[in-house]
Amino acid sequence: MKIAWADPAENLRNVEEIANALSTDIDILVLPELFSTGFLQDIQVISALAEPISGTTMTRIKELSRSCGFAIAGSFLCRVGEKIFNRSFFIEPSGEETFYDKRHLFSLSMEHKVFVSGDKLPPVVRYRGWNISLIVCYDLRFPVWCRNSHQSYDMMLVPANWPSSRGYAWKHLLIGRAIENQAVYVGANRGGSDDFGDYDGLSFVANGLGKIVSTTDSLTGLVIAEFERDELAKIREKLPFGNDADDFMLE
Image 1 (cartoon, rainbow, N blue to C red):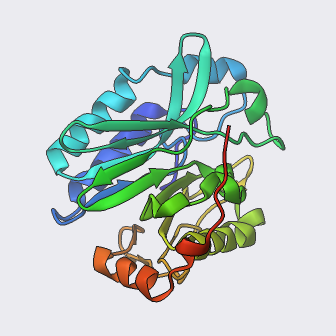
Image 2 (cartoon, helix red, strand yellow):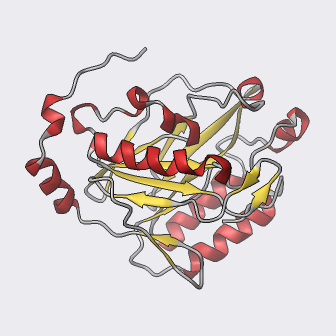
């Protein structure tokens, strides 16, 4: 998805067009990090565009999920009082909603100065027989934060704004996290380019063995993958590494 910089209306129209064109057997549509605005560093622009959960962006995503019949995930600029968060979301057709605030803010940019870091562990959502968790972009670099303790999740969604200059690390971190956690990892990177670099061709989905299994539709550019829960269960049964994992206490 090519993101129009600081233009929520245009980006929401784009998402609605994509979602309405999808077949009815889709279960989850994963959007990039800050899908409605792009990555911003100007404090005034961020302040002007940030919205509460009850704002236009989440209202339209909820309506879209309900009308299309599949869950929609991603992250957006969220305002809570005077605080601004990079907040990821998992919106279900039933109206159920789950949110997570990005924990690790990228210190090589202004992100750590304009956003507030999340203070909650990644949530786990039960959806259509799968346990699904959420992190955002830079969180992927921190293995303890992503640790699948007692195999609590089956799939990790990672909306991102990760430029091609660090694309090798992005792809291999997704593969590594999938292997060590025996879980599906969905890396939903943005497309196009901005002041921070180019992004095309860097969305991947890895299975529980770390193999990239996604394909890209030549007409729509959508990155697609399909899984069976039983296949993941067989991987964990054949290779029960989770039984030998260390426990970590995070504060």
